Image (cartoon, rainbow, N blue to C red; front, side):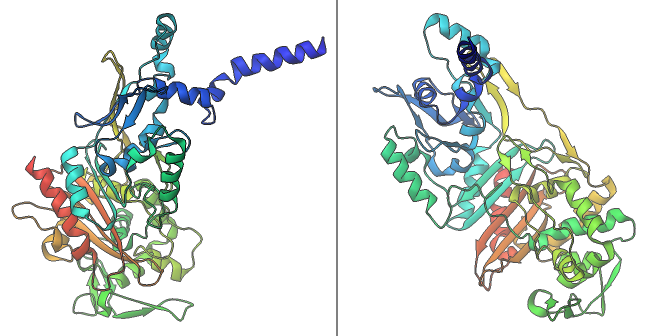
Amino acid sequence: MAMFCALFISASWLQVVAAEDIADDDRNVRKLYESFSAERGEIVAGGIPIATSVPVDNQFKYLRSYPYGELYAPVVGYYTLNQGNAGIESALNPLLTGRASSQFVAQITSLFTGTSPQGASVMLSLDPVLQQAAWDALGDQRGSVVAIDPATGRVLAMVSKPSFDPNKLASHSSSSVFDAYLQLAEDPGNPLANRAIAGDQYFPGSVFKIVMTAAALESGRFDANSEFLNVPELELPLSTKSIKNSGGRLCGGSDTVTLEEAFRLSCNIPFAELGLELGEAEIASVAEDFGFGATLEIPLTVTPSSFPRGMDQAQLMLSSFGQFDVRVTPLQIAMISAAVANDGVVMKPSLVDEIIAPNLSVIRSSEPSIYSRPLSTGTAAELTRMMVGNVERGVASGAIISGLNVAGKTGTAETGIGSGRTFWFTGFAPAESPRVAIAVVVEGDRADGTGNTVAAPIAKAVLEAVMAQ
């Protein structure tokens, strides 16, 4: 009797309590074969299918196809026989296979009709024109471009390079998939990482000065005309190291410099001084309001950006112009610019507009939602004015577009590995009625390069594509 009871409990547990977890386990080969035999839903961007299921004459019945290959791969991801899933293919897998709880009626119907459930289609927020413009502008360089609608949080473009061809991972040959995946996994360029939201995060360099300026203005103790000591070199406390402005020059031509002038010329020393006056806690609080430290689901999981805590004075001074151990994703930097553009409000970013059932009914629809309010309307307006000046008369002139007011900020960060650098631009346009906020990051070791010469022209190309629509 005891053995019978044990068997009864075990079988009941497997068939009822643990059934869903077992069904969703990636090691469940039967489930995998069944999912390949079902018509998986399309993934669509701007009305264009970028992931489809093509009928084939074998046991799997359908082959996943990615018509645009590398262009959308970091977002769409892949769906494989033996190497798991990634991207939207993974995040929305139950819906794409037709096995989500919201598709229960269709599943019951399929049991009576003897057919496999048909997956729902996912409508992404990506704009194919902007996606292509960002891809082309980035060229052969490593890095990322993220563009979002500041009023809604919709992600309009998300490019990560180097990328990969997901068609090679969609094969029905296990050995071919394994070989292709191994080659990508061992590639030093790390093409499988979506640099826009994950992978090895970046030092933000001077684009972090937007956060610093926001913290200064929000504190009520500083304004655009607040003055700071202006020296060509400043020794760090309790250290033999010193910090310099770009090119080792004075920030302007006098013994003091205003906050606005330091922002326009992107000088390090005044912001290091500002960091000491504000303090770690106040800077961290504003950074968190912008999204630092938060794990976002868009529905792809976004690696949290971070502002270090428990620093000494030297480390705080370095962090105040985006060095030491400040780490960010390009999406986070785009969210900062979007907040300034949207009167101080950060909207929750999203990649998905709608999920549509095979009968064309809407299973899920994305509605804009507020993530946080890190800035007052007045501070956002003042930052906008300063960022416009940075493009028109400062070190972000590479983003100038004739007849258009562009707000922007550049940055050049040291990686600490050899002569490695990251080149940044972030901003939005039109400044008076923003349609898009953008972040561009480029990896390199060009000693003569700056954010203005490397990243700003890429942002300019994308912003021009927006205005042309």
